[in-house]
Image (cartoon, rainbow, N blue to C red; front, top):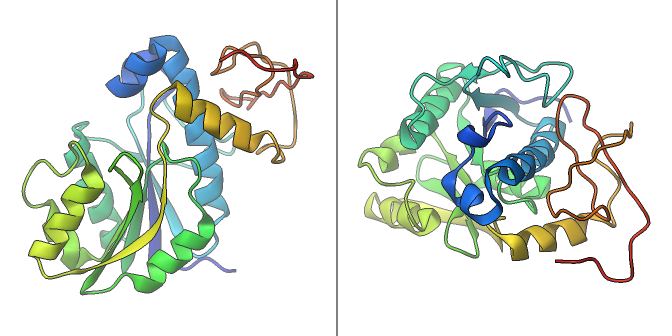
Length: 248
């Protein structure tokens, strides 16, 4: 499928540094491990978005001296929208504004914390988004996994607080107040702790690796060599024969 510039996918990307990772992940996994988990989730989400041929891709990224570009995510360095205001709500709005400024008619924001997003859901959402319809995908904890809008529907961002708490429910309520119809994609889950991380790692054991060239790596988000890691510039992967039952 050829690229469609009327559609845009937005992904917020954080460098693989402990002080740039969200507090929820750091509380769940500790700073260093949270950076590895976040990087692995971002690699998965980026691959999914990049392979979706029916939209352009905008990556919102706040560069750092250690990671001034995105070669750690993709050796081809895909380029990015540089973050001017790191506050979550301003960052989201800036990314949507750029999408529409560059000609997109519809834009879809993804949450990289939702590893079971499907490209089919992107197609369904883009088909549904319109002047009177927004697309909202929910996680089991009430946060959103995707959010799709037209430029006219950015009015749901007008009041601060849309990025707090149960974001899918907050945004759905705002949409209803603006007399907008909500298109919902299937419910999924976000990786926020050990249980959801284990669920994702077990699910992807049966899938082929995201990157075809394998190297050795000592890092693993579960602290278990049974599970493979993909992070860093070379997207290293380690797979070893599993024990009878992996430690949790």
